[in-house]
Length: 168
Picture 1 (cartoon, rainbow, N blue to C red):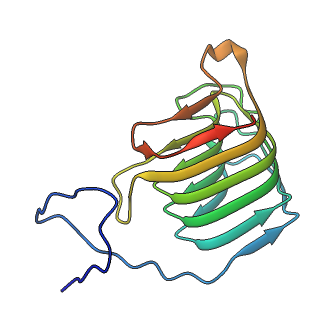
Picture 2: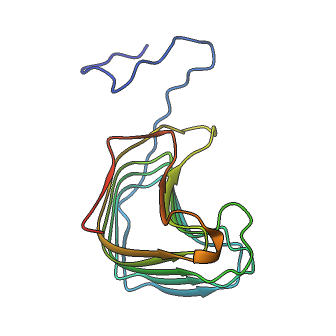
């Protein structure tokens, strides 16, 4: 039995596939991380609550690097003073600097993000624990992409609600 003390943020049809999941996470604090990776993915943060990521310098060099930093199914994640570069050379459909998937209450404050296709993107998938991206604020982040892709530099996919870019 699930008892709610407040209304839900969205209407969810009652179907047999609805699930209620609880994420248990300790507090993660990262300061001054430097990565230079030739992997398909760089740094992957998944199922985190109340994470603080500061002064990160992350470079992805794989020819078709999908995401240099992934924030996946997280809640209340703050990134401050980020320097992220996706230096891949082949646009394969992702090629993002930072990907925020199915996460809520995310803040990215200050820094520089380069993506081959998009610098920062929100989106998602249908895996267990997925929810709409909600309350994502990117503030004071210089963003760039490879102009040869003819894509816009930043992207909110359709599952994103109450989110915005500010001073970018």
